[in-house]
Image (cartoon, rainbow, N blue to C red):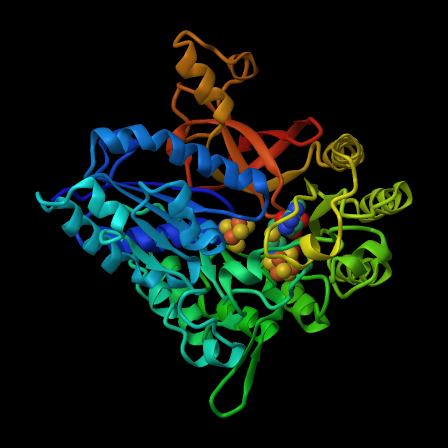
Length: 500
Ligand code: SAH
Ligand code: SF4
Ligand code: F3S
């Protein structure tokens, strides 16, 4: 019975965490993780539905596997995550060679489903017509069970078991780890699939979160990022009606993990960000002064059509509050360009908002109409593609100006970074050309006492989430080090390790 498993993950940090948790469970059951689908008995795609482009990648992967499945009929193919939930069993019509469909709110069921799929697919009598009759298919979708109401979800949160199952072994790299504090979303922004794919917002019990962060810190985590779609909405109501707010949770985690150097959280929602939460950030020295807080637009008319629930003025007031409490705060945001009916004037307001807030970076997306959302039913996708592209580029250009200026001000400063790993550019070029010598590295003598003579370009991140390229060795991965910023380009800083 084949148990070699290949998994590819698309989408946001929630999916990255889901993959880690699922793999933890499967490894404990004897599955072995392999690096390519060619070596695998089971291929899983953990998918994202947020924009059409994210889905297209998975469609093409599934198309490629059609021929493989013909040659190896026992191969088990699973689509898990947001796209499984959004597409539902209709996916089998287009891709009959898929065996498993499991939505993100049902992932605790995946080990049993895989077991069933592997056992049935290994039966010698199992021929292709069986697969088409659906016998080998395993389906777990929120939509196919009863769609849970918010209250039901809060009391019957079977998915909590997935997070609780987290096991950390000595071989796991936990230097930068995610911990979920809420799952799902109740906001129903008109363009967004997430409330439909991940279900209603559920807040995890604080003690479970704290225990998980302690477990990771004890295993050597240097940075823990708390995850939620609207992370600052966290408010856990205990059975005795006491409420643990987001600010309370931050204080409690910070106090419980004195050896954890960095605590962060994403994604914040621009409404209901309390002063208490900002104070917690200011008062707890190990909480990073960083907010990813998507604005989406600078136009009140568009924000209203998006159902975001705030005005541009309210957004700016929050940014002002945050900056006045933490002058060193680093801010990131998301924008959608070309939302239905968006005019040049609306677009200009987004650019103005970007300039005012001086974001560290902006994730800019062209509006993508998503099946099942309110916007696709209510509004025509009427901004032509060339205008979307141009507005995307214009916003990006303003962001690059702002980033370049922000980054220039960093030159000469000494900052703490966490080493994330080798720069992709270096490893890609090195692979393509074994004699490759990066000239930016060649002239630099290693400044750090721990450095070996072989120097590679590393990617590191500051407490404010800025990327810094530094020269070092891959063995430094996961370490917290000091660097001096020596140079900057619009989106990247360059630094050298210093030994203080
Ligand atoms: N929960 C987070 C964002 C989750 S989705 C929040 O509300 O801030 C990540 C980003 O994808 C969003 O912030 C939005 O900018 C973008 N996005 C979501 N749906 C989209 C769509 N239909 N078209 C284009 N971008 C979209
Ligand atoms: Fe989507 Fe809005 Fe929820 Fe974010 S807050 S996940 S954009 S519905
Ligand atoms: Fe994508 Fe689902 Fe995350 S739609 S962005 S993987 S919540």
